[in-house]
Structures are given as C-alpha cells and as structure tokens.
Length: 617
Image (cartoon, rainbow, N blue to C red; front, side, top):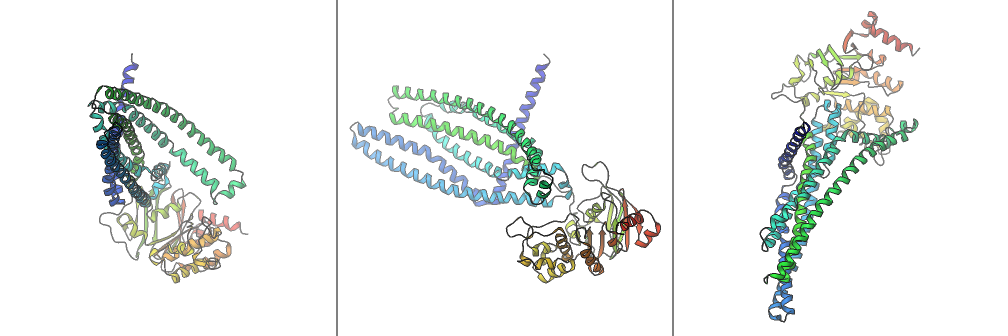
C-alpha cells in the first residue's frame, strides 16, 4: 500500500515538471522573436500577414470547387442556363485563387530563406561575441564546453524552426478556421469532435520530443569526445603521432563504440515513438471515417445537402484533419525546439567575472614605479590545490626580470594574472600602487605584449599573423617588416612565393607550412609589433636552434629598451640577461636576485643552473 502514494507523488512531480517546461518554452518565445526582429525586421513584418493570407485561400478554393460541382450538376440535369454561368465564374475564381496562392508561396519562400540566413548570422555572431567576452577561466572547465557545444548545435536551424513553427502554425490555424466554418454548417458539434480526436497526436509529439531532448542533452560530453577523436584522426596537427604509434584503429574503435551506444539508445526511442504515433494516427483515421459516414447520411436524408456539399464537407473534414495534425506537429515541434533553444539561452546567460568597474581608473602610461604581486594565491577551476600560494614579488618599471622554476610551479599562471586573464582568489596585483582590478581590462591589456609558450598559429597571411599584434597599424608594412627583422621572421617569410600574402599553415589551399621554430619567430614578431611598454616572453626561444636563439638574445637589450620586461625560460643562458631573477617553487617565490647573487647563495637556482650547464660540457 505504501508504494501507491509514492507513485502518485512521482506522477505529480512529473506533471509539475512538464507544466514548468511548457511555461518555459512559451517564456523563451519572445526572446526568439526579438532575435529575428534584430536580424531582419522587414522579414518579420511581411511574413506573418502574408502567411495568414495564404492560409485563408484553401477553404475559399474548396468553396469555389463546391459551386463548380453544383453548376455542373445543374448543367447535366438540363438546366444549362443556370449551370453554365456558375461553372465558368467559379472555375475562373478557383483558378485565380490557385495562381495567387502559388505566387504568394514563392514570395514567402524567398522571405523565409532570407530570414533564415540573417537569423543564423545573428545567432552565430552572438555566440562568437559572447565567447570572446567570457573569461579565460570558463574555457578551462568541461561544463563550459558542454554548454558551448549544445549552443553551437542549435544555431543551424532551431531559432528559425521556432519562428517557422509560429508562422506555419498561424497559416494552418487560418486554414483550419476556414474549414471549421464550413464543417459547422453541417453540425456545430463537429468542430470540438475534430479537435478532441487530434489530442493524442499532440501528446505523443510532446512526450517524445522531450525524451529526445533529454537524450541529446545528456549525451553532450560523449558527443564532444567523439568530435575530439574525429579531430585526432583528421587534423594535420596530430596525424603524425597517430600514424607513428598505430593509434588509428584504436581511436576509430573507441569512436565507433560511442556511436553505437548512442545509436541503440536513439533506436529504442524512435521505435517507441513510431508505435505511439501510429496509435494516434489510427484514432484520427477512425474519427474521420465516422464523420465521412455521417456526411453521406446527411446527403441522403437532407435535400439541401447536395453532391457538391458532400464533396465540400468531406474534403473540408479531410483537410481540416490534416490542418489539425499540422498544427499539433507545429505545437509539438515548437515545444521541442524551445527545449533545445534553452541550451542557447543558457550559454548566452553566462556572464564574465572579469569586467570593467563602473568608474575605472586611468591606466598609468607609462608605468613609473612598477608592478607588485602581494601575497597572490590562485587555484584553477576544479583543481585540488593552489598553483600559486602567496606569491609576493616586485617588477620595477623599465627593468628586465626573469621567472624560473620547474614545470607546473605557476610561472605561466603569473603571466595570465598579470594580463588579467584571471583574477587571484587572494592577494592583489598593483600597478604603481593601484589595484589591477580598478582598471578597465581592455585598456590594461593594450599596454602588454605577450608571447605565450602555446602561441597561436593563425591560418591567415603572414602579414596578418604579425599585424594582429596591433590591429590599428596592420596596414603599416614598414612597421611589420621591422618587427619581423627583430624576431628573425622576415627572411623565411620573404622567401615564400607570395611573400607577405602567403597563407601560413596547410589548412587552406596554397597555404605554406612553417617549422615550429619559424612559427615561434612569427609569434615573437607579433609581440614586437605590438610595441607595448610591458613585454612578456614565455619561453620565447624554446623552438629555436642555438644560432637563432643567440641572434635573438644578442639583440635583447635593443628589443627590451625602455620596456618593463618579464622573461620566463628554462634556458639559463637567456635568464642571465635579466637584472633580477625570481625562483618559483611550490607556488611561492623562494629566491630572488641577480644571476651573480643567486649563484653566490648556492641554493636552488645555482643547482638548476649548474645541472643545465653540465649537460653542455
């Protein structure tokens, strides 16, 4: 007996959840309509009235057909004088209505295609702009990628499908009302009879639409894994190792395993849906057969119901049933698409944490005193422990400092915090004594040029690859060449067939691949082109050979003249050029001083330096 109340409670919760989802679906519709309005206002203004006009024509055409049949009946009965004009008039009207409908249909198709393209552009732009505006920390969490994946999955057709459900629903509703007016002349009760017998179809469509949404939404992490495996097997970046280690079949088997898991779940859902939809169609078919029998009975027993009337009623009922089914499908599709579009709005509703204050402080230009890290602690999202645990250090303005330490101790994290790609959880970073969080992040980032260890490889022209360092000067070829000279990239660029207009990388036709060392030179040129007062070089020569590294650091004083420079490197030959060196261990600064001072201390720095020097003896 105890199981029954529990089952009732589950049923009530399920019902409440369903009601909430329907409410949410309708709640989101104004946001979708606002999207199409912003994407293309004239399209929305024109589509709705045009759709209603098209929807009113089928019932009118059917009435013209009824009058033609009645006229033909009179004509065949020997009353040609009454029948002939009626046949000619209503045949012409019916033909005109058909031509009008076909013409309006084509106009509507053009409007729909244009609106769809503009809406897709608008949504894609929103997703990309929103992604760029999000904090870097969001991109370091799987949950963010799940939301991004779900949002990107929907942009192809979901927003426009919702608009089309509304437009098509309005058309089918207008058509249905015309048919119902005709049907109700035979009996007022036939309209509710038709609507009630169509409810099973709506219930089935809504139920399985929700289950399909739950299946796909719950499958997002596995879907991302499938896309990742696909990229491993199809990208030029990873294919060398995949082939070398014989990973192809192993990864393909893993992809296939994921595919078949989803396939079998989806197949079971499709089978259940098909069976239930057949049941709903069967109910509708039986209902239509009952009406058909009733219309024949009325034709045989009521003198005013003519053969033309019988055709009018039966055709109206058949088409009304089709219109009701179409409306039910539109409602169910509308509901299902709103469930999916919720993924898009969920992604767009996320807000960055690193934002400009309402009254930002003006960034010092140039920095006069320097940069200070004061007891800075930072932990990455989802990490078990801090990567920085109370770091304090000072970088005097216009000086060259280096940060050294083994992998994973937080060197690059310091750079990210300095660039305000993250904010510390504890402590603060100050610029001339002003908390970094008081500046507009965009204004501050304009003052920094950084070459990250995992720098970007832009599959664009060589000119753009360097010019991206300072967009407002991207057309200044003299300045671009000068930056490429400083990094050593100019020679390898100008020997390519299309020189500065050569597309780098092999993603696109006629692209020219560079060696990793040449890519690093391009990345360095991009940083030098930015010509910012603060220069950060994270392993700037890691991919260069000894000769190339020597050339870079031979000009190190020239490259860093007048700039506050932060150098991160495992190569102690380059670290020696810094005026102050910070040693990071376990998220803390354990030593600081010049090369000579740290060697004299004979502690961790000296150990690392001598260990590396021994490898070259």
